[in-house]
Image 1 (tube, rainbow, N blue to C red):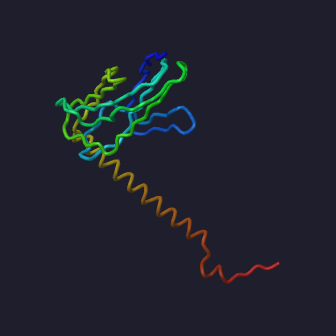
Image 2: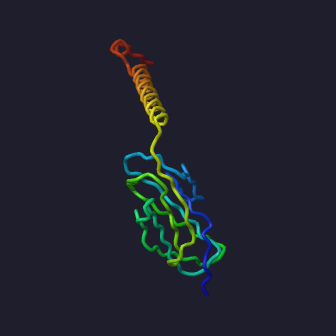
Image 3: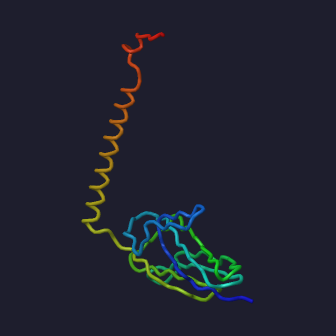
Length: 169
């Protein structure tokens, strides 16, 4: 006998760790500043309290209502009601080509069970200035670290004067 599961969560995030432990969702988002470049991200769905074989599908729609991308139907099985199923989808290099509200739709066996919005917006002038400032600071810090590493290497490596000494015992 089959019992339809419940969608416990649907989480969009930029990083996801699952190696032999409960999942860690990093950089969970509800909006994306328009980067003018493709974006890669995850959507993780947690299905629970069901038993049987099912399909899920995630559809992302543009503000105009047209389909941006779909996972297609994905099969999964819940063998026991008390053992949940984590379904992770990686959306690689998605190009958001217009500003506005993008709709995330989650389907179970062709029935929509959840819908939520991700806002794609243009960066403000202040955000662009802050991004450039942080980028410059990061570059300066990296350059300083490289100089320090080089100095440390020079301290550790023997110089021509050191090579003339021989200690024997």
